[in-house]
Image (cartoon, rainbow over all chains, first blue to last red; front, top):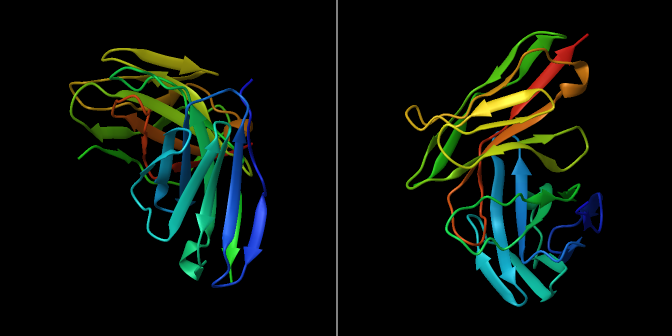
Length: 117
Length: 113
């Protein structure tokens, strides 16, 4: 079974702190994703990566950056946390389909609930 | 642009009732369609998917048929259980090698004994 793990289930930080959220997958997937989940808004894509050291902005990248130095690990960084970044953060991974249709499943981690005070 | 609209919740049902959660989409091309489920305190997991028109995805008693003519992918189950209580997300895969997905806002299902 694919396993996606996230470094923390719950995290409390103060405004202005630098925050690192870590995600690791064990299935040699090329694609990795960071989403945030907010009530009434569903999941919104922050950043994704389709290869080591490759990244692309999603729909809401402002205030975030990412790092992918190794294939299995994808980090989300909040350079200066703000209260509006209080949310549930979900990491996912999937195979590189190599085609024009998206058929491969995204596998999700359990999520990190971040509170910024 | 591509988008997904799903019915707002919460949906509250008694055990053994019939379930329908509506999902419609707007997309160019031939996207794949997915239903993901999120149980309390967990991440999302794939429930079922369909990759082309008229395909029916099914799993754990849930079904959804990809209807291109009505741009819909409604989730159904004939007899729900308390253990089906969760948030259900419809998602659209617009294509491309990176497997990006566009998610609906989620529908909370509460099944009462």
